[in-house]
Image (cartoon, rainbow, N blue to C red; front, side):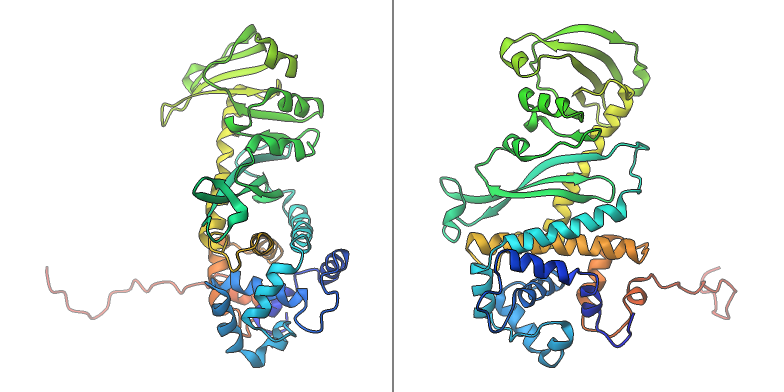
Length: 388
């Protein structure tokens, strides 16, 4: 890596600029533009995400203070608050959505051989959604309740590397289970879902596609037990049953038999009941799989704490979606850099280092590699001992 380039420029070297131009041409993002292209807009928004800028005026002040360096950062157009606000408002957010999916494809390829907490050959996904609260007076298009606005971030997370495979941004009114109609189920993969996705007709569609689901049962489930297997109750398992539904309405949606597993968590003593169509994995592995679903909750918590997706630089729907997709692109970019440079640091540490060193001219690998501290000298010194 060229030591004369700033860290921000070295980061952008990992971005596929040719594919970005194809995304821009697909939606005519640079049509009739004389300055401040979509690439300039993306770099400014990525800079804001990496350095925790609070507002458009904050972005303008920071970048204009480094006016002589902007050309070398890749930003060719003049940065101003009004120009950036207009770009976020009118330039199609699908440009940045498509580009984020290109980065996601690269990241998943890099992490596809990684292991997670369970030694399984199948790809394991966790499906969930998080709500991003918005002020209804500023975001009237995002009406959620009578006096509240919100959007939902629906995510299908690949647990190998915690890379989102699918991200959908919808109104807060959209129920989580409706997203299942927009997903293409991967044969052989395992999908982990909470009780909000318990809809038997949609679960049967997963079963028909050759994929597997693991979800929690509701408290009152009308079923008929067809058979049971012996379980080791010392592990927390209580039963492992093959069942079919009794109620004709849900049974019309899922006419076949599936598996019901009762489990008591040894630590919290919480009683859990799992439903799955996977009849090959041990019952304890099914329980451990559902515990891995917590990774998607940690993903939501991470991006809300360390990226700018709770306070927005614009109030239009296009501006909100542009900012969210830019944040996801930055998250995936950091994951790509972590893997390609074979870094031992956490994503949080990498992001913190980048936030204070983007304009430094240091080789990226050197800046992100943990320094080796000298061993502490344990030899006795001439310091006097005050107390015997």
